[in-house]
Amino acid sequence: MNRSVKVAVAVLALTSFLAAPSVGLAKSGVDLRAELTPCCGDPEPQAEGKKAEFKTQTKNSGNTGVANLRIEVEIPIPSAGLGITDPAAADIRVVFSRGEVGDYAECFMVLDEDEDDKAKFELRIQQLSQNGTTIIKKAVGQCDIDLATGGVQSGVPGVLDGDLATVSSVVEATSTDFLQGTFAQH
Image (cartoon, rainbow, N blue to C red):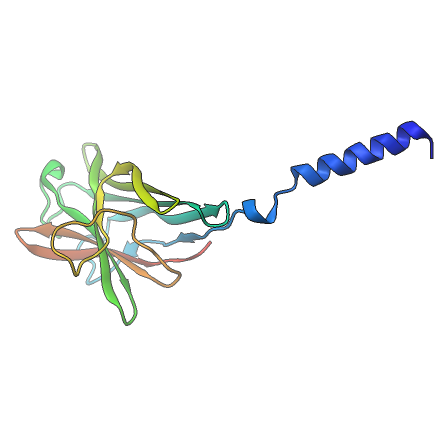
């Protein structure tokens, strides 16, 4: 092998080694999704769950983590079954539950679009954790991640494979469940 070929092979090997992620910088995470479908006596059969995703990514040996939760639903307006005539005044929530634990988080969705015959509600929260400090980076809507404590403890719920998400409309303290789905690894 001539000298220039040996140098090229050595440079290629060194470049490949440097470009490969080190063990300390490896990324890991989860990608869970749920299909939200009409449920619970079907009070609004035309409601649609457009998206339900929970994603995390951890890097730098666990010192940095990002959690993203995104849920979108569409509801026909007016909706007699949900008691909604004005989408701007609607109170749409998502409750997360897990087997023996029961309900562990409740999120409040925000009206995103209001067309003539339907309304789109959205929840989008991104949480960054770095060196023991956690902050909400982006939020459309809000989640209470500790239902046992009074008030709202904001954050992204720690969704696990198999957790149930139930979407409901709350009118005058009466909650009507209308969409439901189970999160699973995608």
